[in-house]
Amino acid sequence: MKVLQFVDGLKYGDATGNFVIAISQILDALGIENIIFTSVTDKEIKQATIRMDSHITINNEDLIISHYTGFSRSINRLIFKDTSKLLLYHNITPAKFFKNWSYRSYLYCKAGRSQLEVLPNIFDMAVSESTYNCDELKKAGFSKCFLLPIVVDKDSLLKHSYDTSIVKKYSDGFINMVFVGRVVPNKKIEDLISVFESYQRTFNQHSRLIVVGATNEVPAYYDYLLNIVQQKALGDSILFTGKVSTETLFAWYRCANIFVTMSEHEGFCIPLVESMVFKIPVVAYSTGAVPEILGDGGVLINHKDTPAIAKAINDIMSDKQYLSNLRIRQEKNIERFSHDKFKENLQSILKIVEENSKGRVHKKYSLKRIKAYILLNMVGVNIVITLFSLIKKSASLVKRKYHLF
Image (cartoon, rainbow, N blue to C red; front, side, top):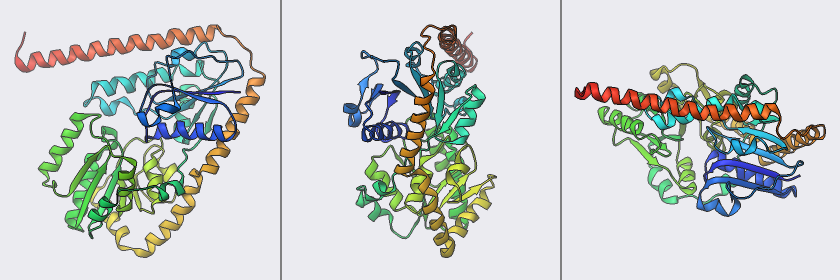
């Protein structure tokens, strides 16, 4: 058996990229031939991949793993491949979060959700990082979904080099409230800013908020956040780092006193696990997969009562015994995401795939697959129609604003 991983875009250091590489490394260790196909990749991992448009020879006994993060152009290529196919679903942010911020992101997410409904006709089974994601797949029509939580190698993180200058500069007695993630609407950074403002003004003036993550994905949303910071006169206390290197990220973790997230959609949320590895107390809004991933390794917030959340943060920062007990719980919780556990889970899934493939009937051009091909292309047509509708709506608004008739 040969394993072929397909991913539309492979980015160095992001969750999906790390997942793809982790699978490849374990397959290498098991002596299983494997190839990563991608359309776009970062230079740091380019040598480990083959371009998607290259000639692909696939045999009946091979396994295709398609990583799905949103609308995928590569799926069409896989429909008529007559071999076992496994969908690895990394979740798609609901399009509603982007509706008033980015037409591009809105369309991408909306198309991805539409395409997801067709995928049970193409893939034999599905895998995902969380039960929350698996529940979404079952609603989409998949009868089977197997768990494969992301690997977070504790030793690798703690031994990794980091930017000592950042740790030296920001380990200055201030409380560093840190958030790690893309600056996009579903992360609700505006709510995080409100929580920080309440904490700083009520409990600790010697504190700062550090938002670590790319700010260029939805520029309008980032501008909105900067305006909030300006209006609240918090400019000296809030830092947006933009996209950072791994060394810089690990430096921010090392000088963090607490990790806080008010995000309203998470299919997994690796920063929760990374924070626990660095023994950082976590306060997180209870949404999506967050309760499942955090376990008892942090504090879950069920209601966005800003003053109450600020008080909870202050209570945590003031209670040394609580912090000590929390770190013990964190240590136990992160064992679920160890390299050995990931390897064990992946081997179990490969065994199931192998057993299922033995009784598999090869029907390259079945009616089911032809139907899937037609439906997938209908999704593409719907995207064009939706885009035309959005352009028309925008033009109408411009006409009204400037009295153009």
